[in-house]
Amino acid sequence: MGVVTPEIVKQVAFLARLRLEGHELATFATQLDDILQYVQQLQSVPTDQVEPTSHVLPLANILRKDQPSPSLSQDAVVALAPAQQRPFIAVPKVIEQ
Amino acid sequence: MPSGSPRPTGSHGRQPVGRGSLVALTIHELRGLLEAKQVSVEEIMQDLLAALERLNPQLHAYIAVDAARLRAQLKGQSGAPASPLLGIPITIKDNICVAGEETACGSKMLAGFRPPYDATVIERLRRAGAWLIPRANMDEFAFGSSTENSAFGVTRNPWAVDRVPGGSSGGSACAVAADLAVAALGSDTGGSIRQPAAFCGVVGLKPTYGRVSRYGLVAFASSLDQIGPITKDVTDCALVLSVIAGHDARDSTSAPVGVPDYVSAMRTPAKGLRIGIPKEYVVEGIDPEVRSAIDQAIAVCERLGVACTRVSLPRTSYAVATYYVIATAEASSNLARYDGVQYGFRASGNGSLMDMYVNTRTEGFGAEPKRRILLGTYVLSQGYYDAYYLKALKVRTLIKQDFDEAFGQCDVILTPTAPTPAFRIGEKLHDPLQMYLSDIFTISANLAGVPALSLPCGFSKQGLPIGMQLLAAPFKEDVLLRAAYAYEQATEWHTRRPPLSAT
Image 1 (tube, rainbow over the protein chains, first blue to last red):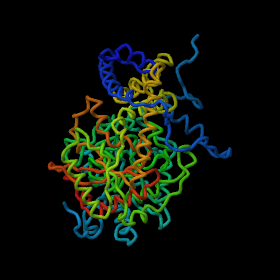
Image 2: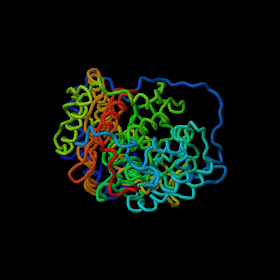
Image 3: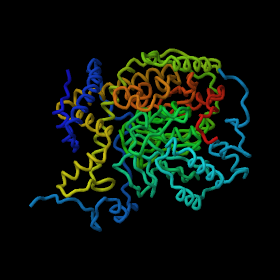
Image 4: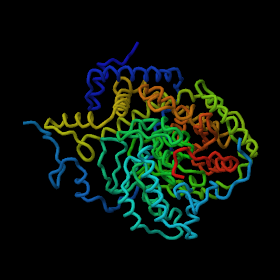
């Protein structure tokens, strides 16, 4: 029986800032449940003494000299924004009255 | 099988002048003709534009082609005569930033986005004298194995137009196979270079994690993504890798490891190499024609003086499950940046900031990105993190250990690239798990970070290409290319052209 219900999908969608309609909730619930059932097989692998690998290279704390160098202009960056009030990026009001 | 016969003139045996399309030639063939002044960059451009006009509407390898911009690019063309790619067009997947050129990652979310900077690989290609052909089609955000998930339409397989070219770098592979590109760059997170290369009958390499800078690659799963070449033969693969590989201070996961001359290394005879055949790769569901092509490829290797032994990668069967937890977790985090504020798409409307975020993401992402974001968000959420994400990271350690142990016994591992030849368009679109399982042989290389290359090793009775995958220990691309080149020299699969090509 499925562990992923349409209600759970709705909660996860909220966390991910997505809005799903009724039929999408049902379809995604079925599909995510299929995939997670398949993923369940990982539980049978003994991993008690195993360290996690988040990254395969033996690199850590990559540092560079703190030297100033040219960066993109404010104009070039703001020009990419879908809404602008030069020289700023425009967004809906953040603080309510 | 056609092995051991003497090679025709030129690695592809095609007449360069007087003449088929120049785009049908390899980089090394074109470089020879350019140096001898037998062809000009303008002639290559003309052939490329003619081929695109004729075949791109049908194959849709490129999302869009801007002929005027391509011509303008040639005017600014410069480079020292010794530049390795001088005058060579290189096709770029739609998720690699080219300054000023639309780079939309196959998504409505980035439609119209023109990055203000070049990816490091693009800088390196320019420095090597290449000119760039942007916008090879791809699955949206590289999520897919068929290029059916592009927001800009489906790419078709030039060997059979009712079949997928593979994915997510399906546009790049299709273009190289159909002679709509000389060579291309793709990206590979779970097989996205190798599987389309296999489905389209060309060569594709996923380098070692950290070998090629990811700076300027639109991020999917940052611990798995690599950029690599898709080419008509192994020599071109070595040429392009030599240009794009190397340390980059702008990518903190770029490895400070020197870059050898891959073309010279490739020519070292393969005799004495040890090839391992993992017993776990003979699995249920593998197509009998794929199995037979691999068996014949092993026989060719043995004739070349390569010792083939059985090895074991016991945790192989857990790779797909491990991958779809880690890759979706990283993707959900990387895709959080698409909020309609700084760049890309923003939904219209007058709601609150929260409404704007939600509407933008709901309208901007297609079904597959939504599915992966949901899955990734789920496995990272409180209460599930240890059971799914942390568990997958631990199994990843074991999968990597399997490779470390196997490479103690052999230099190269040989497997099929995909369990079947190219499947039909629509066949797996509504069954995500089946689609994910088509990546079963390619995914482990990304989890372990090892380099892996696909090259043609046969055809099905229906005339569809079959690819074999070679894997080597980290930073042993030279060994990989050496084995691949020896096999390619002994066979003629790479010289076959699809029914739909500009040749």
